Image 1 (cartoon, rainbow, N blue to C red):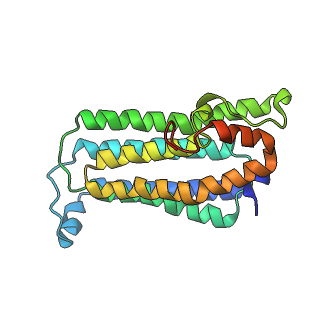
Image 2 (tube, one colour):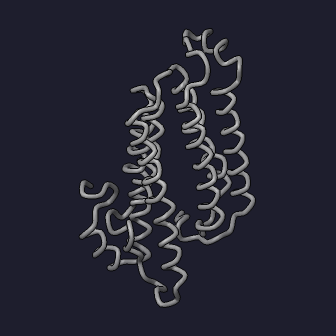
Image 3 (tube, rainbow, N blue to C red):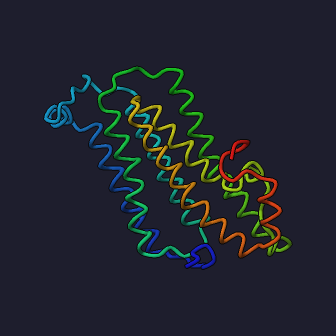
Length: 229
């Protein structure tokens, strides 16, 4: 089934996704800031720092911005149908970000530094590639003169799936702030998932829908990572 070719508002599904993501985000805030966090952490062998390190606030800030950006993307930019199965699996994926990084950051009491400044830059750049690129594509699609044309401008000139690359960047920003090597398993998983599943699926849709336009685009443009692949 080609979901990218089916248009629908799917309002109920999108509201469900947003509500479930908000619940998970609230749970992640409890994990990081609830006064009894040290007690349950000690029960599994974690010794948490005294007070609340600033990097926990940065993790929460990333999650709040991500929730808002995802809601904007779904309700304003996303035109395809969202099946109910997706409405329940998407929040699970974001639980990995919101709750996963909230848990992984707990043992760290390291002060914020230059690497965390880099993380903020990666987070903004990734969000720009993702949402900014989709905004430019939406504007292109709304112009009647571009009906039936494949959008290859803006950041999509750097890679065919630059929006997915943006996801990898902002998830990597979380991993830097979490301040543990284990956090890098999450962006590595996301990279693998995109390369193995999302990119081939979307390529099939684009090849079917745009034909020769897409083949010319594919011949001159990297698939996912600018200048690399």
